[in-house]
Structure formats: C-alpha cells, structure tokens
Length: 165
Image 1 (cartoon, rainbow, N blue to C red):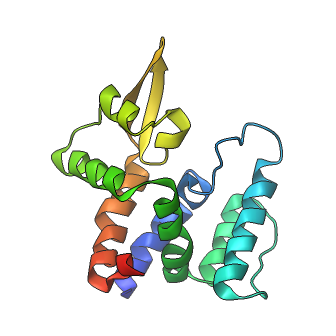
Image 2 (image 1 turned 30 degrees about the vertical axis):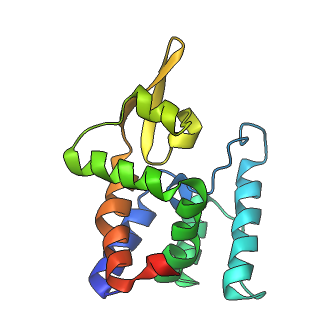
C-alpha cells in the first residue's frame, strides 16, 4: 500500500462516525455492553492475525482507533480485519450488485433489499435504510463507507490481488 493511500485510509478511519466503519457491529447489539463486545471481538481477531501479544487499552473509540493505527497499522487493519469482515457479512454477488448501483449513481430499491434479505441493520454500513410503514427502503448510501470501500479498498485489492487470499 503506497503512502498516499495509507494517508487517505488513515484519515477516513480517524474521521469515521462509526468505529471501524461500523463493521464490527453485531445485529443483536441492542443490549448493553456493546463497546465491550466489539473490543473483545477485535482482540480475538487481532490475536488470530497478529499473535497473542496483540492488545490495546480499552478507551473511547477514537483513542482505540489511534492505538490501532499505531499497531497493527492501517494496511494490516484493512487486509486482516476490514476486508475479511466485509466478506463475512456480504456475499460476492451482493457486493457486485452494490458496486453496479454505486457506479451508476443509483440507490438499490426495496426489491434488492428483499432479494438479499437486507434489513435495516444488515444493509449497514453500505446503505442507510429507513422504515416506512411496513416497508424498508434505502434512504441513502453511507457515502463515508461506500467511498472508502469502492474507491479505495477495492482498487487496492485489484492492484494487490488481495481478493485471492
């Protein structure tokens, strides 16, 4: 990863409204202890990827983000945590269709949401879905994340061939 891309991704992560772009959120996070559960998940994933000595101090999200940018760094976060989490949450077919909509400047419709069983929580962080009566519909793209994924990370994946890992 070149320094220009590292700087862009670092800046985007530091200014994201959601910790790690909202990717470590679990769909049953409506109960208490959310931050602790996210940190436990991140520690577990980090130890698997970077060894048993990986750790960080439990602090507010912005402070943990700073710690993660120091160790393991943005490239390892993207390669070992962010990309695998996206792959865990979204099928390649779904990502392909999202990319088509993104490239065309369109929002997916209700049919798309139903086809992929994307409820309000499951569509995030790519899409912001609102409920209207009994239907859910896409209110907007979460452009903060969509730009990072489609414009930066996927380009890097293509260059590096990281999709084949």
